[in-house]
Length: 87
Image 1 (tube, rainbow, N blue to C red):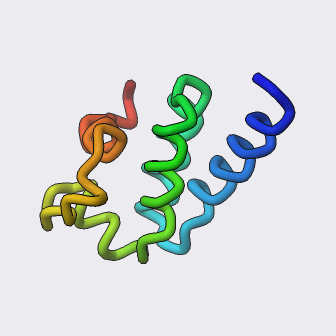
Image 2 (image 1 turned 30 degrees about the vertical axis):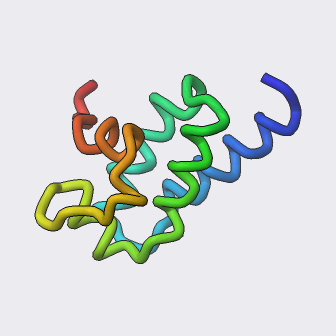
């Protein structure tokens, strides 16, 4: 990983762990810890875009309580939806 990628992943990990809602912090923090290193640049773009969404709405998308708009319904969102904290 290059320095730029290291810095980006560190920033995304931090943002994942401190989203503002405890449930989302726990879920996305664990997801980021386990999967950020394997995401490519395009997937990181999709993940970063998801982190810009307000927590209550994002949590509903992750838990399939609400359908995500097509521009956010990416393979990365589906990876998060399939993620289990016990992975």
